[in-house]
Length: 71
Image 1 (cartoon, rainbow, N blue to C red):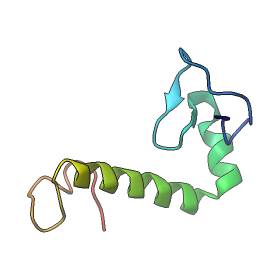
Image 2: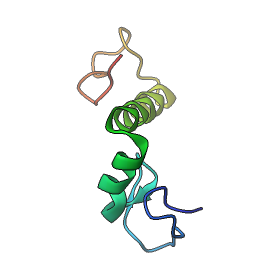
Image 3: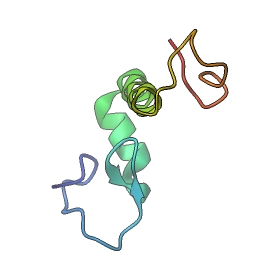
Image 4: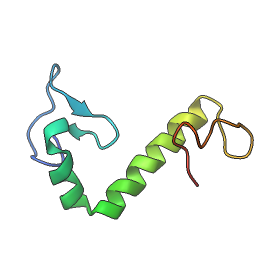
């Protein structure tokens, strides 16, 4: 798998931005390439998806918004 920011391989032991799936140092470059709104939407989608995997849904769980969920 290659980093969407620099297109170099993602190697074990490197620091990753898990929500954007890129090298941590490439976060800004990845956001620029994707477009900031698209990157924000992708991050929010992944946060909401992770909360749903844990059974935390909007309107059904009081911690949804406190844990970063947003609709």
